Image 1: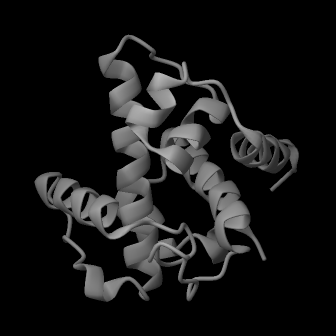
Image 2: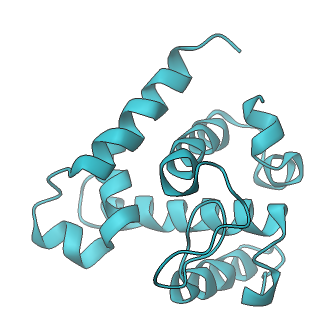
Image 3: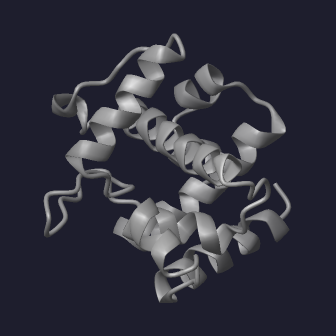
Length: 150
């Protein structure tokens, strides 16, 4: 299955086909591989939902950001929808990036991005953004996907 088959084509079109959107889609593919094995129906132990294992609070925040950006806001009840999962995950990743920019870290590593995805901003920052096993797995998959010809 190719990147575009896993990551909703609709989401790619809504987000734009620029280099950052494509890189973010590849990063999210790595997150999905580690979080759920690309299982869009996955339900985590703490109630996280979907392929990216997004919790309700993060989902609601990301959906509100989508609305502020002029996109459709996906309610939690739509978590099974592929486009909703992809759009919410992409919005959450943009929020993570914006937090790094806010503290002067304009080029976070894939490990740092994955760590925040895994443990949250406050916990990651309190540990100095030192990568854990999860972050290394996501970053390695991400780099491998970039190295493959498309």
